[in-house]
Length: 491
Image 1: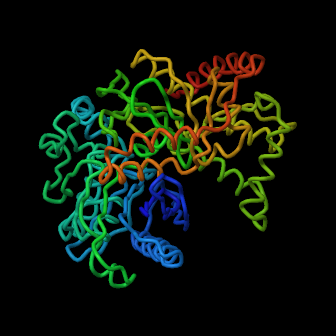
Image 2: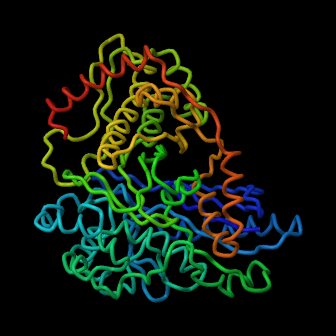
Image 3: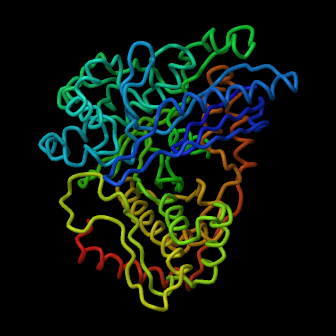
């Protein structure tokens, strides 16, 4: 059995896969970050350590109960958090999460280098990515910076806890603004722009590499005999795309969870004049082309918590909202949402740049506002799909994934707004499945293709076809939305 540790923004999952890629056991424990009023978003890295230990114990207990061996561990994780760590493995500060906006005030300092940074790294300077967070620590937490051995994220931290080695892979490193896409290495020029000590960066390996063995202390605590290889399976979005079978151009995955991502594969980096399309190293080779929305499921959760009494359980809140949305017609009775609740991720000088509900009146119902959230997310994703397709000269098949796709009406809204079929996948653990593929490939490369193909055929689920009447309505709303956003100063 192979254990995949899937560390997401709000939870850590441990999933045991058999040799055919079937999930035999799943554990999940939540670790929501702390959202502070001044734009900071933080997490205590020791929570990740505790949840990793819990995932390992639960998985080994399941294996022992069924007399099954643990053959390997693969890790995937969300990208771009940053915190300093000392040589003893002690975190010196809370992790600055990818949604954190404290560095927005620093972005202008790098404007003269932004184009070169984009061309080299595939990413514009942004508060989302790692480098400017490292710069913030250096500028505002100089003692912790000096004391630090490495500046790392959750991926490197968990690999270190598992193996004792401080490594990262190309797929995660390519979300830092410090990694050269062509050279597949840390870039000295990029590092000099941010003034970071190169020695504080982790050692690089390729995605899918065996980066060490499970350390003796963990093996002893869990009563595991023999060596257990640990594989750096890749970043979460890279693994998600692989998990859906997307290894060549022609298909886009729309992944809607905490944030939302439009993802596809290209044989080369893709760039645009607005620097809004990102290129990363893909877990299966080539490049992952990406455009993202930082707040998606987060907005839906926020609205549920805000609008429904606190004594109601989270599951009942979502169930209630889902029912009310079904009673609101396409177009949400005129209500519109701009779902940019974290504001812009670069220094664009926007005058009205955060989230907003528009066109409310005294007849507006909670279900209208909730439906406007789903439609607002879908409109933003539509724009990103069109932009990627214009740069890649493709018209793509659309897969939908992520926690939001458990709601069938959301999938139908995607199809109606995208004006093309949308395939929602049965495989709710696409990220972990992609990590299993990369981990399995490290040991059985010749067999993986067959298993991959068979598993993905079984993974396809419902296909949502666009309703002509709804799509026509959404086309008119899309045009009004563009005019409204332009008038309000959105880019």
